[in-house]
Length: 458
Image (cartoon, rainbow, N blue to C red; front, side, top):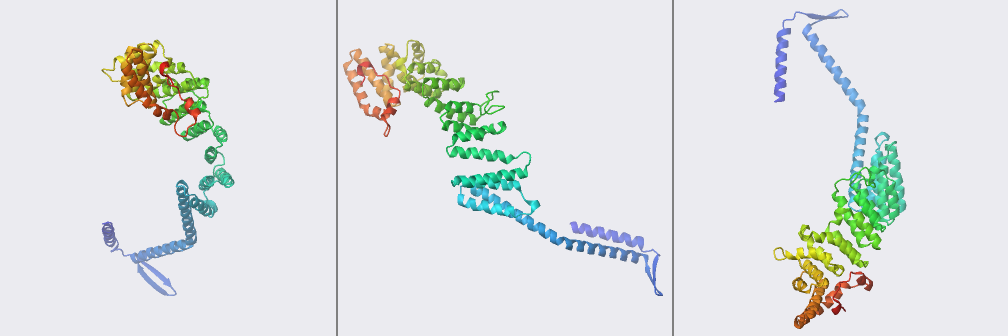
């Protein structure tokens, strides 16, 4: 369609020219050596235009001919640059895929191609990236000398590309910290991270690395502080403006809190970790149960109960799936309960008929009643818990022992004997739970001891 329109336009122009110039009586005469040549004005104009067009075409052709070497050089440069870019992508892919031997070859080839580029076409940023990849591959191949040399080259290339502010320096320092952490040099990793600008330390990857290094050094409380500060501003290490915690912050906070509570060396360290956990964590059953278990292992069941009682008082406000864990925690520390626990326990057990309680909660209620001398009230919840298969073997055996003790107190010899037989049958299971295969006896002794009635201990 385009060509048809062009032909129509040409035809119209030709028709107009013929009609407008056809009656022109003008002439052009040329006299050379006595020879006179006459041409019509129209023919002269047409020949002049044709000559001009011919000269123009010849000029453009000569100019294009002289440009051929330069265009050829540019094409070759673009081709080399394309080859270098392809080699760079191959080096990245091989490095990220863990093909270390192939990655070494790919990085070396890419470096050669970039170095062979003309002076004005070289790319220092690409060279810096390739040297960082080379350093990472050397690190994973356990070649520290080559790694350090490649890192130095990366910094040099980055400085060449950015004389004022070298963005590759941040990358290099962060990779150095990561490599130090992977090599077990956690103090060095912390020093490298601390030397980074505040804006860099706020980044999630740096925060994770810092928290992991603290945990590896056995500083869980410091790791907890760092994890809690991950989502805050203006600096990662400054506890200032409070923000909603991110998923990353919650994950690292949970990891640090688990280590801080479960590995506290003494009661003071445990108190510090529990205090630094914050109100939100203190109102969650999983953390309260973990802290209570560690307090029992350190010999302070009263402290464990102090942390559990606020949750027990609001038992029906707790998540449904966390209530069995709360019951187990209270059950294990029930020997230290006092009369203050009866009111909340009565409320919990009173709703058993309408809202059935988990076996661990029933056992906890029964043991609290038993420890406070309410034998009659303790029998029913203990019997229901002992008959249930939901309880762990140690806690179930404890329920049978208390049932045997309470039945014996009330003169029910047959029922006491039956309960004692059930407890004896669970003896091996209890021992296996307290002393797993391959565990040292000290590990079993560190477990919180379940308080059996004095009449049947041992």
